[in-house]
Image 1 (cartoon, rainbow, N blue to C red):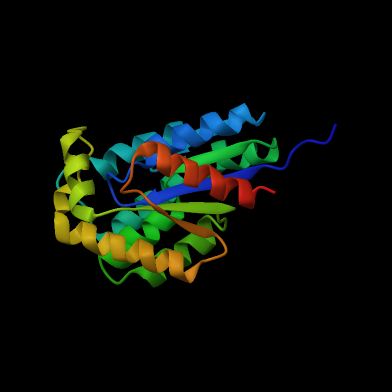
Image 2: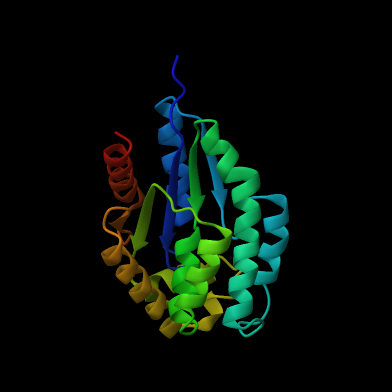
Length: 209
């Protein structure tokens, strides 16, 4: 019996857009189709990366410069890639990650300063991998921000940047989708969760053929 090819899916979008909910729903669907699934997240996903996550998502908004944030995210991503993503894909599993490199491109490369060249150079040197499919959940930043802050998770350092920052992020993700049409699929996330999930599954079916 031929081992299935691994498939790497990422969910992206502004804070509060429902990425975690859709990642779980997509994982359940993929398992119902007979695939082994690894659900993971960034920053984090491996033991070392989870330690770095706390440095990134807690504390004051101005805790780090954009350059330092980029270095921390890249270190966490490298560990995540080595210990979780690459082995799972080699074993033929479907890897579904709540965020990956596109978040760093948008958050640090577009919204926190003109650091895109720095972000891209680090990605090329240390990561060098793109997802097979990226689902960008798009919704009104004001609604998403209210939802994100209402969680009161203690990991709201980026939400505390305010609405203008979230609007910059949304513009960055929309530009990313336009620039990468073969890999990125834009999903309207301002609808009931079931409708969003249906579109997510449709997009994945088309790309996994």
